[in-house]
Structures are given as structure tokens and as C-alpha cells.
Amino acid sequence: MVTPGLVSVVRGGPSGLAAAIALARQDIPVTVYEQHRDVGVRFHGDFQGLENWTSEEDVLSWLAGLGIALDCRYRPTHEVTLVDPALVPAQVRADRPLLYLVKRGSDADSLDSCLRVQAETAGVRFEFGRRVDPGDLPEPVIVATGPRGTQAVVAGIVAETSHPDQLVVIARDSLAPKCYAYCIVWRGRATLAAALAREFHSAWQCFERARAAFAILGLSEFHHEHRFGGRANICLRRQLVQARRLYVGEAAGLQDYLLGFGLRYALLSGHLAARSLLTGEPYAGPVSRCLREHFRAGFVNRLLYNQLGDRGYRWFIRWMHRGGDVRQRARRVYSLTPLHRVLWPLARAMARRDGCLDVRETTR
Ligand SMILES: Cc1cc2nc3c(=O)[nH]c(=O)nc-3n(C[C@H](O)[C@H](O)[C@H](O)COP(=O)(O)OP(=O)(O)OC[C@H]3O[C@@H](n4cnc5c(N)ncnc54)[C@H](O)[C@@H]3O)c2cc1C
Image (cartoon, rainbow, N blue to C red):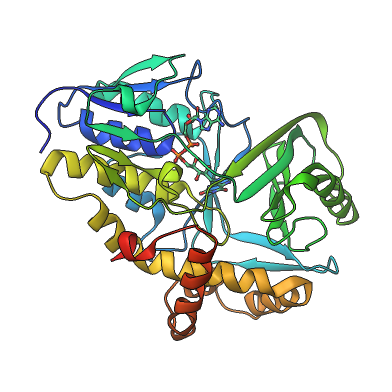
């Protein structure tokens, strides 16, 4: 249990802010050290999705359970256009929101700013513009430093557009190797990007090919463009706790290994780290319990997706389009099915071979 004193949170991403909010609400003095002038500077006003398929419970009420209100601008999204490698589109639909679009960055209406305001209201102290080494701070420290390694890369633009609101995803290796390209349009603003799980050196060439593909699909009106890039860490950290340093979010490699929807992992792990400090309960155990199924399904999904190639993507999109509620189909993909259980030892062996995780330590 934390003795009322200082808890330091290194860096102010969603994982660090979720931890800081939970601690400060219990009157624990918290300081967040963020090397930039504000939260969200790593992002550029690009749109991201808070996915709503890994739990039956709606993600907004799930967030409320963590003590977080989504009081920034957001858009529930029920429809996605999935485009196969031959550029044949298929529209899929969910009865309940498949995801909630949010804006990332430092603007007042971004998710990051909304979390910062909730943290400030709870009494969190921020030190902006201070780059600190977690090892130099008195413990306990919550380490929320974002991606360490690079297992996926994103290259894209944010722009103004006259296209109507929509979310379009293309799966094709020549423009997004082993990942996908996406175009999100929301109230006259667009995010257009290629996400790559391989061939990082060709990120901007891939982006240009993705842009050409979106143009063929009729999405070509983009003005006042600004380029952005990003990276993701899907390499699980060997130890989530070292002395009294607790690693959360992407600093711990907690990510969605298939599609990179890491926001929920970041928020949940930040909250659990704070709870561990507040109650004295271990941190790694609850993380493993909450996420074990997702880890296993995620590593198997990644293994399969890496093998698929363009023909496989076409089959996968047809399967997603086959009727019924796409949210339920996505839930199945992310659940531990008998197929996942059979393939898990192979996925684990491959992840270990890549030096990406020691599953024995982190998921049992
Ligand atoms: C382009 C892109 C699109 C994404 N889309 C989605 C999506 O649609 N849905 C979803 O759920 N997830 C998405 N993700 C993943 C999601 O953004 C992360 O998993 C989540 O932000 C991790 O939170 P965190 O608190 O662990 O780390 P971060 O958000 O990275 O926060 C860590 C903090 O550390 C600092 N920092 C980290 N790296 C650097 C650096 N290199 N230089 C300087 N400062 C740094 C930053 O200032 C930041 O404040 C996306 C990621 C990227 C890059």
C-alpha cells in the first residue's frame, strides 16, 4: 500500500494519466513528468478508434468503471468499409458502435487534453518540459513512457476534406505490409495513413500507394495536409514491475497485437497500476488475469495474419462481410477460440524466438 507521499508518473500518455487520475482521486499526491510542453504532443490531431468489441460491455461504461469520462469530442461508429487487395469494397455494420472515434494530440477537444483536465481536477501536478529518467525518481514510479521498440510504423496525413464522414480500411501488402491502410473522415477533417508491420524503410512509399488506392475508391479531396508518423511497441516486457517501478501501456508492450488498438490496454494497465499502489495488491497478476485471453488470442491472430497475404485478406474480409453483426465477428476473432488454443504453443514459440516476450513470467 502506498504511504501518502509522492507518486511520480513518467510521461503523460493515456496510461500515465489513467494511473494519475486514480491515485489523485484517493488523495495521493501525484506528479506527472512530461518532456513535451503539453500532453498528446506525440500525436497530431489524427483520429483514432477506441474499440468496442473486446468486451460485451460498452467501452464508455467500461471507462466509467475506471473512473474516466469520455468528455472530449467523440463519434460512435457503426459502419466500416473493408476493402480487399483487388480494391473491392465491402460495407460491414454493427448494431452497437464498433468503435468510438477520438482525436489525439494537444487540441482542447482531444482525448489527451480531456484526460489532462480530469487529472488536473483530481489534483495531479504536471511538470511539462522535463525529461526525467525513471531510475532517478524516488519510488514508487509509474513508467508510462510509450513505445520502447518498433514493431509497427504508421505514415500518414491529417487534412481538410469535403468527403462525408466514413471509415475505410484497405488490406493489401503492397501498400501496408502485414497491416492495413485507413482513411477516417469526420466533420471535414481526414486522417489517411498506412500502417506497416514490415518493411518500415518504405513507409512513405507505402503511404503514397495507399493514397493512390483511396483515390481509386473516390477519396481524393484533401487540402491543407500535414504529415505525421508514429510507431507501436508490441513486444511484451519481461517484467511489469521492477523494484517499485510499475510499467504500464506501451512502455510495458501492452498492445493489441493484431491491429494496434492499444488505447484500452493503456488505460486499463494505468488504472491497475494505481490500484496496486493503493491496495498493496500485486500489479502483474491482475494485468495477466484481465488480459491473458487477449494476449493469447492476439499473438495467434498476429501469427495467422502474418501468414495470410493478399489472398488470405480477401478471404478474411469476405468472412467479416458474410452477414450478421460485425462487432460479434470481431469479438470472436479476439476471443480464445479452440483454434487459438491449438495454435497458442506455436505462436508463443515464435514470439519467444523473436525475443518479444517471456510468456511464462507475464501471463501466468
Ligand atoms: C499513428 C497511430 C495510430 C494509432 N491508432 C490507434 C487507434 O485507432 N486505436 C487505439 O486504441 N490505439 C491506437 N494507437 C495506439 C495508441 O495510441 C497507443 O497504444 C497508446 O497511446 C499508448 O498509450 P501510452 O500511454 O502507453 O503511451 P503514449 O501515448 O505514447 O504516451 C507516452 C508519452 O511519452 C512521450 N513519448 C513517447 N514516445 C516518445 C518519443 N518518441 N518522443 C518523445 N516523446 C515520446 C509522449 O510525450 C507521450 O506523452 C495508435 C498509435 C499510433 C502511433
